[in-house]
Image (cartoon, rainbow over all chains, first blue to last red; front, side, top):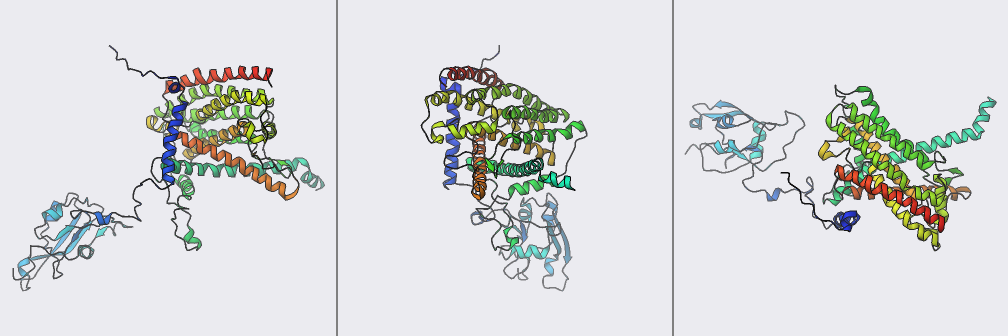
Length: 176
Length: 384
């Protein structure tokens, strides 16, 4: 059996519809008037106003290479981040540390380390997987560039963005 | 040589160049108004919805060396129409392979032509240096506008049919049926006005209003108390104004009657398959039709360029020219106020259902307009 939609009984004012037009105009013009007096809370005007100071400590922005308190890059070029990176944004070219060097036990260092920020999905798996606490996702999120080359973050840029961050893993310490 | 000089001093030549100048001026003003109406639409709607709208695109003042930032809260956004126009001109003009090419190309032009031609009979000012501010002072003004503006639907129908796709086709069909149901009410609703005034010429209708007060506000604008017949006639005029305005909303495809477009149900309606400047032409046509519609309402009911206390441009010398320009300014201010009202209504009311639209057109507006004619005829016969 067909279902009969219950229609509400309308009185005359509702039937001629014009009073509801006026009621509707009252609402919209009220919003307009509140806006014109500056009483409405509007959204943040992005380039002028930013939310940066409210970012949580665990915020996942651009991945960077951090240095220890002696200014040494902590990366040992194990390439785990390169392997785990889902969009394959990371490319590492490991270099060998000669046996006579005082850091010979570290064995490898990154000769080249580049992250393609066009591919990066900010998942944070590189930070998660790094055994040396060398790669961290910092709070920078507005990564822009005018060319593909500019969006390719090289080792120097990554180290500069990373800054110094002490950690518990100290492979780059000849005494430990 | 003499014949050319004689022609250059003749009345015919004077008429030709003043008419061309008026046409060019009016077209410039109206098209400029269209682009800023689109801006006003976007801005007012966003302010109503607690947003800010386009407030960034300013004029590049820093290039001119004023030492001001390009983005300012006051001028911000006023460059948006120019940026939009440039964008629409430079976009790829894509013609789908499956369309009927000839009609597909001719439809946008038809749409805008109808809207622009009907502007020709609108008296947009009193007179400047003896030249009446109307392009074609013909004796059947409103009828001409109704005839031409209903041709505008051909643009929509051809667009919908030639696009060879379902949504535009539905939009075109809706547009046709909507036009048939509202054109009747539109035409019939102004008949009471002609019964009272006794003229069909728009310039003379305006002159009647200058002398006797605006049709809708006879007492306030004539500077004297309304007569008994004016008070009695005011009732049918109010009804006629309401019906005419509602029908004009339907005629210009504005919400709550925008069924041919209906973004939410028909993607974009009749202009779904159009891009770039052809789409922009539809847009221009729609807004020009809005301007024509509100000019007509203002000319018929709200005294066109007349405002109490402001003289017309009939006096000699520079004051006459100045007042003539002020009259044009008054006219376009009124038109703009009415366009803002169009915008308020659009962002307030939801769209009608198709059957509600048909019911409103055929059962209510048509009958009200018809009864109103007889009511006015009785009043004119016994009171006027």
